[in-house]
Length: 138
Image (cartoon, rainbow, N blue to C red; front, side, top):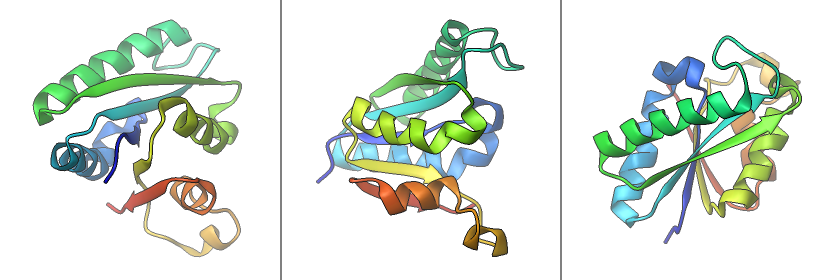
């Protein structure tokens, strides 16, 4: 049914993504398809990495650990954005095309009143992506 799953990852908050990451891995095993783990970073130094290359190496290490522990085929895709805080939705939309994903499995918070004004990242992708999007609540 699906050929490639994309799982957005925030390396600074992996614990909060556990349900979505487990769900992506479970679906990947079920359909025997690879998972593209996508992380978005800036070209400027951050607390997580000094540059995009270092971020890419950290993402690859995370993917290797995740793929081994879940028994799936995983690839790392580091997307560079000028401002990940404001550009994350656009960066993830581009990553869907770049990875060839036909399913996105991502974490999101429980909706609240602010979501009527400013939608969540998961909500925005679900609304605009041309592929299926599964939003996993905590």
